[in-house]
Length: 124
Image (spheres, rainbow, N blue to C red):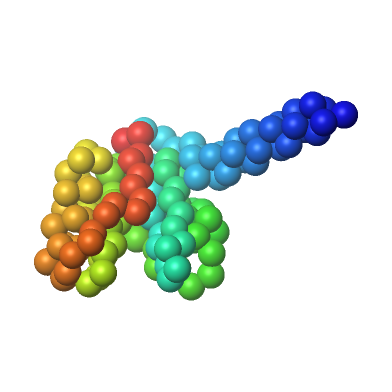
């Protein structure tokens, strides 16, 4: 009986992750893919990539993050959000690394303790 419960709990966790991943990743036409990162108080965050419109990406990221989150959208690229003790930074670039570095530079200019909290890249 205990083993059956463990299997059921494990399957529930896998299904929950699969459903969450599906809402973050959508389908778009290559060359017209929208993404969004969202962040809010208390460390809340969400992301969405490969949506067919700016509004669809923003809504999906906002839904993952929760109420009161700020949403930043991007098109055919990568984006990152970093936060620290003094503020936050946002980066948008052609690669994840460049987006993260821009976000970190902006964050560091406002204070220390910065770390990338969320990023996303569209398929382009």
